[in-house]
Image 1 (spheres, rainbow, N blue to C red):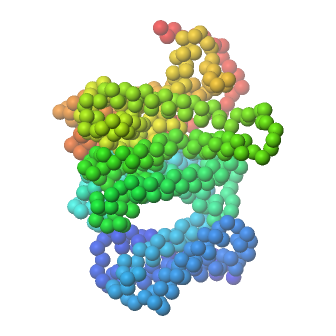
Image 2: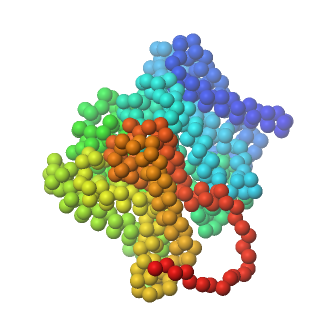
Image 3: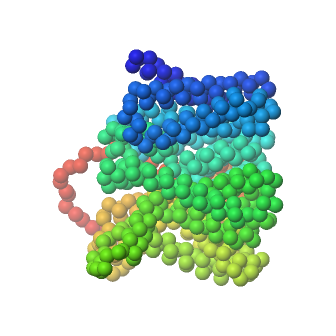
Length: 582
């Protein structure tokens, strides 16, 4: 009996995998009436096997009824049975059936079946084979390559796309950069834009985050070794917090994206779109792109497009969305925890006053928030006055402020633009370069050296100037390892960007040095802003930018950690000596 059930589960898994390939083939290639009917029939076969497999699991293990997975299974099975009912008892053949004329619900059910079957696999991260840094790098590399081939499918573009351009676009989407060599709005079909949107979502969160959490959710547990690996990736202090952290990351991401999507939908004029579905897709695409700090847009000129550049309500929504995405998941969780504590103390029914205030807002959140607010405020003031009679000239009083705020915050790896970037004054360009280099906050969807790295470097300079031997802030001392890591990240960033500028200058000597430098900083910090040279770069330079985007997303320090084998800690220390610096 057990052997038969194992065989059933294997059949369900492989049919669901083949179903995903059929799903891709259905959208990626043009289908004749016969092949479409064959594919639709196979989709129903996948769903049927999936339902049988789900029922078999509950018959075999009644304990599943006590786990949260039962809610997913009930909804998934009910959804599938509804599709069967509509087709068999109410619907007629697909060609004339209004419900299933383009049976998108059928294909969504196939995806749910695949998620359910694939999540039953026991995902094991062998630390003896690959360390967390190597797993992280390989997962991104794998998604980029898969995305490249998907973007080369005939129905993904209106005209054929070369492998290099597909690789560039896939890398830019997965690394949430936003640099483009072809116009996303006019070059890619709805299917191609959907692929880009999915790549952005996966790249923003990481495929291991999805796979690990769903495996844990459906199986109800995981191995100790997996917890160790995931604790390294999520920087969880306790092993018991690993999956609660992953759960918070996923809920926060989808929650903010859903909320932002609804607000974006209400902020745009329906007359700018051909249909309501196009308006909904626009809202979803930009909500995901903004939260993941990707900078991709379905508009040719991004938000500078006519009809959108003066939509200040939309711009404010985009600003708050990518700022939340750039803060980092631990910071957002800590802020929510702090707000919950403040509200509970404010509305406490207890008459006695709370004398002791716990350290709810931790040192990471304090440093990140202070640095983010300081940089944003300073950049806003500088941008406003430098560009007042230049790129802000076409806006009114309130519009100038919103556009200046957008211009001051988008270099922090967001990548959207509401002005002509190439028309900015030279001092503004230099400020934007600095902001791009600093980037977003740690463990966020953004890139750059990170705000905490910049803060530690600044605090170290101040400590040296005051003659201190240690860095102290908010009645806490910064650990030496954090200082060493910060300066390693800064040094490696200059090495990567410097070499990139040098090589592109060799391959494209006709390009201006400022344009090349701007492009390289934008690629390394996964920003996506450009002075307009991306599409005209040579093949060699495009490949250099691809490498820089990839390195910038995973961080050069992670690559170094992945390459070098860790040495065992030895309990001795050599005598200390000072080195002459200046």
